[in-house]
Length: 330
Image 1 (tube, one colour):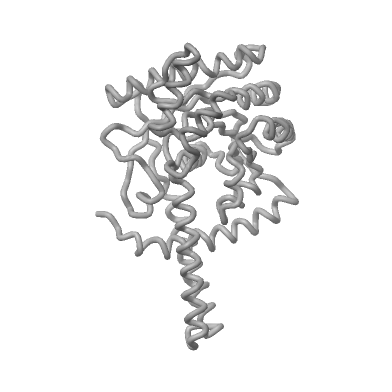
Image 2 (cartoon, rainbow, N blue to C red; image 1 turned 135 degrees about the horizontal axis):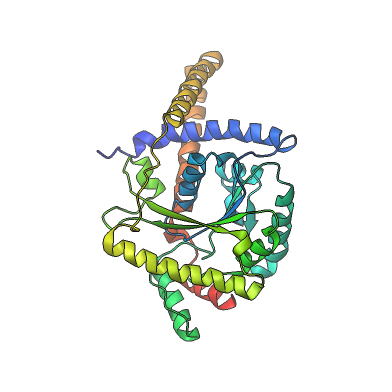
């Protein structure tokens, strides 16, 4: 049964913001002492299918034991998001402006410093450059037709410059590339942050294939072609899944670890106890000014959560025309 949004935004928003600010404080301290931690270097490439692909990646990394040092290449505006964007910045994500002229130097510098990263990491790269939408697919198909390329059906045309740079720089210290394919089955609704907050579930299928970095082509041109071929194959794989509902491989449910639930409940109880003690100590609710201050704080939390939800929605990402222009530049 769906939960009314108003009943979850405030408590979850308070839990998210207060927990996040505590984590941000710890991250700020650790940032100048010890840096993130994890479990096996890898470059992860994936199609960008849903509004919460970043969350899917975090879940996969958490189940693999390397969430603490999971990294990604993100658009620059992401780092300004309260709490979650700050967490990404402290975790040393790479933030790009989607303009190769501006990003080339930033990307190469960021990749080179990963040589000294103190723990194994996953670095995620969405080589399509933007989230999949019907309008952007149409733009990609028009571009493919004009260039004599295979017309995509379920993916966008990959922008390979960043991937080529990543392979060139990371070849010597990253042993593997994980080719990840994400799809939502036809009979399942698209996952969004809004659906999650409403308590409405979605099913997501993910296929991961390991490629040894030592087997990658040597020249930049061949690496670029390898990436494009991977996405042509990925397109066909998604066609097959849409027709049959499976990747024709054994499905391995990743489960829901009890530990995560216990940690969430512990934090919720701890913050609730802290909030009660805070109101008792300050007697904030005993005056009209205090009540107004509390109401303003709750309104701020609601506003921040609204901004966060809107930021994740594909409809608010770059337009099809902008996507078409970027593909042409590529």
